[in-house]
Structures are given as C-alpha cells and as structure tokens.
Amino acid sequence: MLKAQKWVHHKNYLLEDALSLIKCFLLKDGSWNENLYLTAICSFALLASENEIRAESLEWLRHTLLSLKNTEIRELLKDKSLILGVFLGTKIISDKDPNFSRQVMPFINNLIKQLEDKDWNRDTDFPSILIFSLSKFLPSSTLENSKRFLVANIERLVKNGRKSSAIFSFLGLSQFDEGRIIIVDILKRDTTLTDPNSLSDLKSNAILLFAIAEIEAKHKYLFYNQLEENLRRKFLEIRDSLLRFLVFQLSEAIRKEKDILSSKEKTVDKLKEYVDTSETVKVGIPRKLIMGLFEKPHLSDLAFSVLAIKKSLFDEFYSFDKQTFEQKCKPALEPTNYIQVRKVHLWFFIGYVLAAVVSLSILSYLLSNSAYPWATPIITVILTILSIGFARKYFTQLASEAIGEKKEET
Image (cartoon, rainbow, N blue to C red; front, side, top):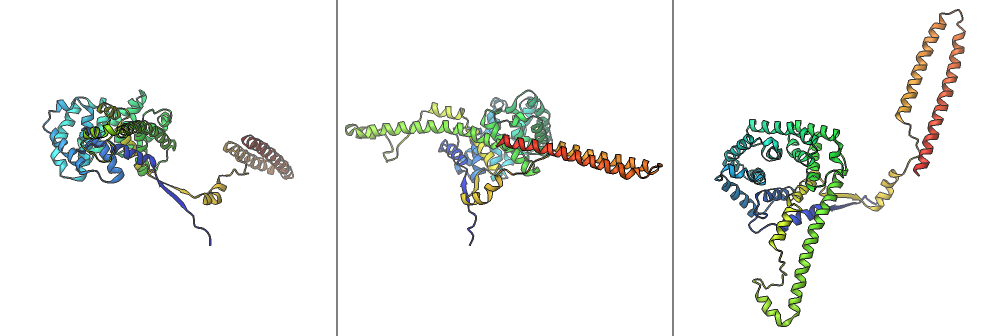
C-alpha cells in the first residue's frame, strides 16, 4: 500500500510573536498606554487574528469615545493620532454594537466638516483611515469627498517621493473599485514602491501587503512575492530589538532577585518591600523606557504587520514531508534538456516562410501565363531546396547558441 502524502503544518511564528508583544503592553484597564489610537489599532489587530478582545478594552474604547463628544473640536484638531483613533475606535465598537454609531456619528460628522475646512487633503492619512474605518456609516457626500481627495493626491505623493504617505493612502484606496485600479496602475508604473530596499519602515511594508491582498481578493491580480519577504525582514528587526530589551530587563530582574535571596540576612527585609511575596519574579521596567518602546519601534507597526499577515493568509504554512518532496517535487525542479527558442527567432522564421509562400505563389501565377509553363515546377523545386537549406542552417545555429548558454549556466 502506497504511503499517503504528508503535509507539515505550522503557524507563522512572526504572527505569534507580534501578538505576544502587543499583549505584553496591555494595561489592566484594557488600554495601551491610555492612548486611543494605539488601543484602537492594537484591538483591531487582535480582532483580526483572534476574533475577540478583552471586555476591558471594549469598555475603555467606548468610554473614551463618548467622553470626547464633549471636547471642543478645535482641541481635537491639535492631535492627529487622536483623530485617527476616533475613526478606528468607532469602527471597532460599531461592529460590536450597531447602535453605537448613532450615538457618535453626529460628533464625527462635525469633526469631518472641521477637517475639510482645514484642507485635510494636505494630509491624506485622514480620508484614508476614514474610508478604511467608517465607509458604511458615512453620508454619500462625505464618502465621495474622501475618495476624491485620495484619488487627487496619490499621484502627487508618488511624484514627490513621499512613499510612506502614498502607501498609507492605499488603506483607503483599496476599499473601492476605482482606488484599487489606481493602486495597480501606480505599482505597474513605479516599481520602486515594491522594491525591498526602497521601504525602510515596517508599517509601509505591512500596509502595502495588506492593500495588495485586498486587490487580489477582489480582482485576482498577481503581485510580487518579495513583499512578504520584505515584511518578514523588517518585522524581525523590530521583534528582535524588542525581545532583546525585554529579555535583558527580565534577566537583570531575575539576577537581582537571586542576589537578594542568596543573602539570608537580607532576605526577610527585602521581601517585606514587595506587596506580592509569591514565587513570581517581578520585573520592574522604568516608565521612561516603556514610553520609548511605544515610540520606536512603534506598536502600531506591529499591529499593521498582524493585519497584513492575516489578510495575506500567511498565518499558517503547509509543506510536503521530505519523502514526498524527493519523489514528486524535486524532479519537477530539475533542469530539462529542451532547447528554448526565443520568440523573436520563431516569429522571424514564420515571417520568412510566409514571405516565401507569397513570393512563390506570385511567381507561379506569372509563369503559368507565360510561354514556358515547364519553368514553374523547376523554379518551385529550386526555391524549396533553398528554403529548407536556410531553415536547417538557421535552426542549427540557434541550437548551438542555446547549448552554449546551457553549458555556461551549469
């Protein structure tokens, strides 16, 4: 009985690491550093990957958004990330509670009007996140204005070399047909946007991959595999820097605890300083250093990487076992002995044959009406021999060139 094919299945460790790092900065009140934008985008990432977030996070978002209704709009306009957090947070709560949008949309519509009066199209992050978050709740006029702003400004961003801003606009553009067509056209014309060495920040790589996954899902376009590789490389850099810091802090804390416990005389006095005297080692990290982690590398970068991994279906991997690969896959990867003929050579030969046939037909017609009808078969035979000789010589030359190239490759 033949051995069945075996598949090796495993989860994407990048996704697991990103989720772990995001969760480790979650505060007891359900927020990330009591920051609306960070809490919204991190919650959004967790919802995309685990389909659920802590009840405390939902309650914190709801309470914070409702409290902002009483804040003057001009005060909100001073904080860009706060406004983006309003849009994203409203999407999260409204998806859980459809009635919530009725409570906050008057306030959000007023905020949008103030943004339009301030020429928000100078910063396309606003309409991009707005469409990404709340397209189904917006009035048609607001939605069309937001689309028009994105479409009108994306070319300017690309032309001015503002790649990160251009790619952030893809979040909104990827949500409607015209926008997706524009993204495809831009990527075909400007290949630097997909160059692994062109984008230095993780967020741009993640958003680009996320947008392309949206396009592939709706239009079946095929794009560049190196995008996922670029995302992997950039995320690993951030993940490693975070892990190095956390491991260092943990190691230092454990070392200090061991030093304390190794001195019997000081043990009792030192343990009295701790409220929790369980066996759990307490890791103390200064708030200043924690704030630095929120700023660089950004938690939002990790959250967007989670969205990209999930949207691109890279959260799970499958592969053949070694025996199946050796038997069925490896032979398919072996170089063949076929000699490839370039299209230009093939088209040249077809053109030559067609020209010879047309010329022979014309010549045959003229000679058939002449006084020497016996000349037709003789000339036909001569031209046929010459054509066969030319074809043989031509393809012999092509074969020798191709064989020479294959030898150079090996």
